[in-house]
Amino acid sequence: MLKHEDLPGLRKLSQVRAQSAARGLRRISILAGNGGLFLPQEMRRGADGAMTGFAYPEMLVRVCALFQAGRAEEAEDLFDIYLP
Image (cartoon, rainbow, N blue to C red; front, top):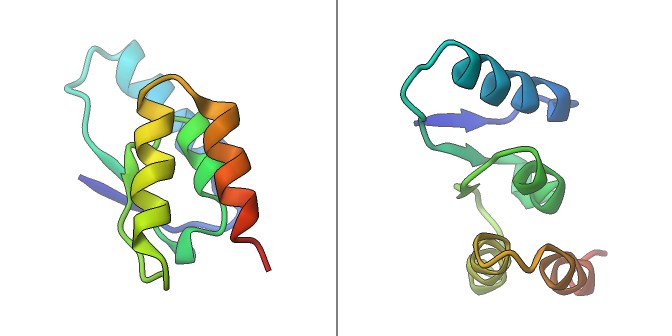
């Protein structure tokens, strides 16, 4: 498992996924942090979920489930409701 908390780190997340696949390495779980600020973008780049402190964890769970179900636009719409 890798906890991804670099800012900005979206390019790095994509690179980790691409390099692992290119080398035939075992896929590891990548969990996003930073309060879930970039969760949809991190999910699009290969994150598997979030491990972070956030006042509404049920939203994080639902966003991740929607992404895993192939419903990325719906996941982003839900996430946007919680933006400040």
